[in-house]
Image 1: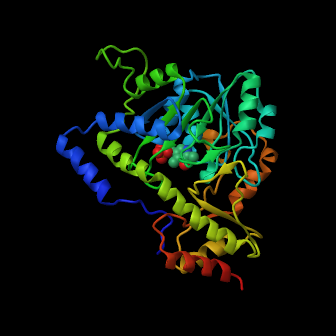
Image 2: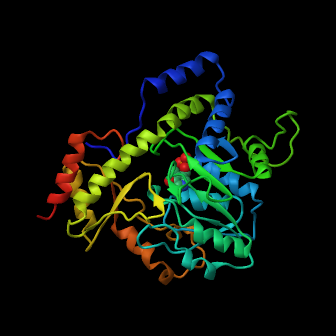
Image 3: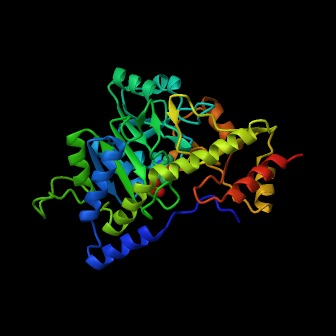
Length: 363
Ligand SMILES: *Cc1c(COP(=O)(O)O)cnc(C)c1O
């Protein structure tokens, strides 16, 4: 079976972890600091805070903004559930906005009509590795005095008008989960240029505990710390980010040119101001043929996945007063999208095999 994702674990990764184990510094320590410094530099942000998952990164960011009951956060319903759960965990409510038909990211032209006196922030997601439309989103945020938090879990290394994700909003949250473009096993990173937010997020990550004065608690907090073991793994991965991303792009380009004329398949559209890191290479299968196509590829030994089969407003705990007519594009996407393998470990033979099988479907 050609897997949809395949983590890169080479001798550097193994050596880095063994080295940490030998120091017996298992919890948050110097490796976490090193990762934070390295990552802030790469992204072009002043601060980076490491957490133990992308979900805890989102929760930490939203808490630091002071969100709570009665507040609303505008976001996309076409994402992983953690995006909206993190909003709920602060006591605030997600307000969903439909997506753009080409990028699958939140449609900025539909945001303003959902803004109320309760709206405090906009939380766009860079789906499949392509940045959301931050120029227009930030414009709206400025006009209504809202925060923008980027869910960059899938877009590590991507650019928008030349700037890296992680530097496009007030705060950005990344995930280093095992299937993401670079990994820590479980892990998250938050970036910001705001000193106060950086300070609050560091507190929240560790029991609200004064870093210089232990057992002095300056506010509410969790244990969202990353271990030095995970950080050591992540540091080796960060060094490979460029080359791993390049590989994904090469494969995506091959798919683009090979699939562009295949009937019933729409290839991903990347806006000219953006560069995608192709966390997923997601095609649309038209005419209700997706499940047949997915089965066919499975029988060919090619793993595929539907990200995401249901919009978030379909779930009981996220079902607030919404009008299904507001989400025509999201509904269509949930019925058409299919992600095929694009990870950097695919061999040339596997890539050509996938191309051949996709092209010969329905012939
Ligand atoms: C993976 C992901 C998350 C959550 O990250 P974890 O590290 O798994 O907690 C949040 N949002 C999006 C869009 C993701 O893809």
